[in-house]
Length: 338
Image (spheres, rainbow, N blue to C red):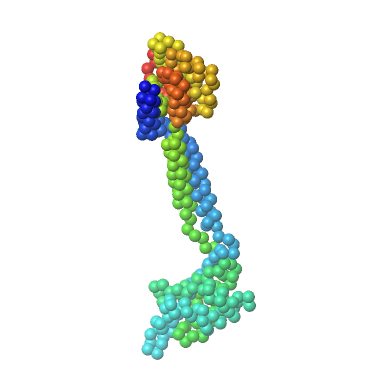
């Protein structure tokens, strides 16, 4: 007989564990809890925007030694006629890019520069291009120093003008436009960086909140109790009048039906005393109460198992100190009983 009872109890225990493991998420409770975390999610989005802007500034800021300064000149090429009466059409963008860094133009350029300028530096800094008009040459100088950029550009202009007087292919070479060296600034992507930071902040915060609530099994509402036990839910013990009345009515009915009822206030990781266990064994029934949002379902299941082992007859479970505002939102409109 005892063996059958033990097997029966093991089957009941297995069914409860299976019920708890297979219980789905209470989406209404989840959404109400999530709404409470909106300020946290927004704060995470703001933090993400700040970090995105900060990272962008740090990445985009170039050390002084690596900053580039650029200036350019527009040079007009007045070609002379050749033996056939045509202008020298062989001068193109590719040819000029070569001519600028080779003799005789480079020699003329170096003569106009101080001794601390090297041919390698001038060669690396110089770029000559011709777009649609073969008579309009654009010379661009790029270095890591504004003064040196202006100096090389000035020397290059003088060299080209002198070259125009020497070369038979030209009547004259003259400068028609010159700019001062300016810092090369990359296109700003600050808005994109901030938006990416906001999206990352939102995604991470929502992921963390979701993981938290998926793992959170604290007892808040009746459905949380149902995941743990099939014992009757006695209601909510709270300062809200209509909720307290439901709880009082259920307790009054249970006492009339059962007789001596003992209240067992469960606290997280608090061991019940031997005297309390003895009182509950002698009673006609036990009502287990858990503090709202402070007791985990897994722990409540453990306590209930221990009470069954102690031959305590559990008649119901109630939630004490409940959040009335949350319950009103969760259950919707409630009728106050007279």
